[in-house]
Structures are given as structure tokens and as C-alpha cells.
Image 1 (cartoon, helix red, strand yellow):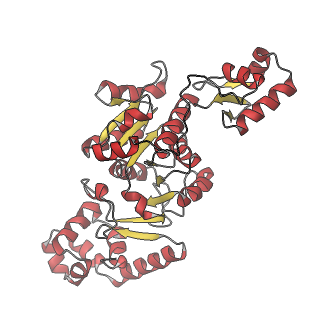
Image 2 (spheres, helix red, strand yellow; image 1 turned 90 degrees about the horizontal axis):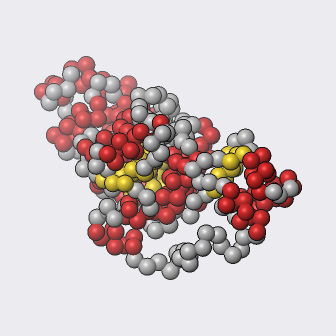
Image 3 (spheres, rainbow, N blue to C red; image 1 turned 90 degrees about the vertical axis):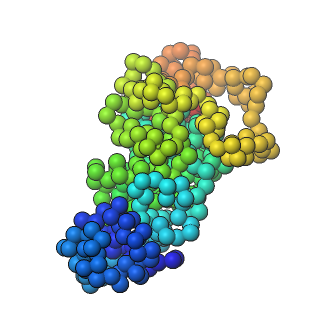
Length: 373
């Protein structure tokens, strides 16, 4: 640590300074020790409002920051500052990088080649399957998947990476002790084991709506490119794409059905010049050459079948029959499958259970099923 974390916590929690204001002060004074040795008059001369300067140097705020540091240590939260050597260089290049990050997990993943996959919270089965498949294929080839731990596409992206024991980063719009949505708490714990969960917001910060557009710049800022999978007209995910463009990063999108409201965002991006994504190879083609060559080199650990068959030989006749009835872009109810498959109820339920265990299908609420791609 090149600077006192308490100083950085003060800069984070003081009101009226902001991320850019703190960054300017760090650029002027070079170290936090020099900054906090300055007088109120010195800070005012640097453009800091007097009431902010007095608060910044107050004992009250120092005590508050020390308490925050103790809380981080109790919760095994690492504080990574912008002056640390391990701070991700890609993120440092954006217009307004956070001056510190709260991290749970392995912070070294923040500097690994990363792709962001984002999209609608109200995702369709098509979007969920697309996000999971892209994340799986990219993660198993060594790329890190970054998203926001939200419902829908974000969760699918993290889940796809976790399924192949790949690396993934979750960027929160709340404190690390305030996981949102709550049902993703277990997923957050899994991500800590195979990546990291990060936030620029102090512990105890709730998931306020205004926090999520702020955190989106970190998702795109950590990533070489951002891929959008489903987003309605006013989706917050569209903000991430705009930020990626402003940051000079690649912008990509998975096309959708033109009659679906969730297709508005990705189809608009593509119309405006974003790369159309059909497979993981389309994403890799947009990466810098050294990374692309590393990803595409032969990997003995990958044993993909290229024999052209739709289903592997290990599937039974009833399993193949049910899979042929299922789609990856729309759910089928169990009653529909019972009518079409001509299996008995017991046979169908047993077949569905086997296919789930073989990771070929997914059950959705209400006894609905989709084929996994």
C-alpha cells in the first residue's frame, strides 16, 4: 500500500468533493500524506470549497474513516487504491476512475483480460441461454467475465462462468455487505471463490437506484469490450454501452427478435455500428492480437465434438425426443411436452429429471422447461 487507506476512505466519504475532485487533488499533491498535511487555505487555493476543506481535515471524518477501515478488516474486505500497483490499468484509463475499490476475493483478476456481458433484468429464456453460453465458452478459454450481479442477464453471465470454474467479477451498486438482489447472496459467495466481488461504495451503502449508473462505468472500464444481451428501450444496460464507447472499448450485441421489447437495445446498438455477436469467436475476434492468439491457441483441456450430430450418443431415445421438442428461446410447459412426446407422465418426469442432471435443460418457474444451448 503506497498510501494510508484511511486517507482514501476520507476522500471517499467526504461530501462535496466527488471522484474527479479527489483525483485532481491526488494529481496535485502526489501522495495522500502531502494532501492531508496541507492547510485549509492551501486546499481552497486548489479549488476546494472552504466548508469541504474543513470537513476533509476534521478529526470527526478521520474517526469515521478509521471505523470504516476496522469494519473492512472484520469483514475481510480488501481496500485497493488508485495509487496501488495492483490497481487495474484499464480502469485507471477512464475519465473518472474510482479512487478506491472495496474487494472480496482475488483482486488480481481485475487486471486479467475481461469481457463484460450485461443486459435486461427481465430476461427471456433466449437471452438467459445466450448469456450463459457466451460466458461459459469465453471463461473456459481463460477470459474473465464481468457483470453487475443483477437479476436476468447479469446473473446468467456469472452463472455461465461459474459452471466451468472460470473467472468472473461482480461489480455492485451497493456496499459489499449489502448484496442486491438478496437471492444472489450465494452466487456472490461463489464468485469470491472464482474471482472477486467489488464496489466503490462503503460498507453499509444500500442499493439506491442512483448507484447503478455510477457502477456501470466500472463494468465497462474493467473490460476490453462490452456485449449486450437483451435490453428494453430504457434499460440501464444501455448506459454501460454508451460508457464503453466513451472509454474507447469494443461494443458488441447479440441480435434479438424484432417483435420483442427486449431486443430494442441490442438491435439498436447493431444498427449504430456495434459488432453483431453470434458465437464466442465473434467476441474474441475483437480483442487485441496478443490476447486473441492466446485465447485461440489449441487447448487440450477442451474436448468439443465437431461430428455434426445434434445430440451425443449417451442420450436415450426418450431424452432425444424431449430435447427435440424443447427450444432454447422459448419455454415449454410440462403439459405441452406430455401431449407432444407421447410419453407417460412418469416417463416424462423421469426423462426431464435425467436431462436436468446432464445439464441439457433448465427448469423455469411453473413447470416450464428450456433447452440449454
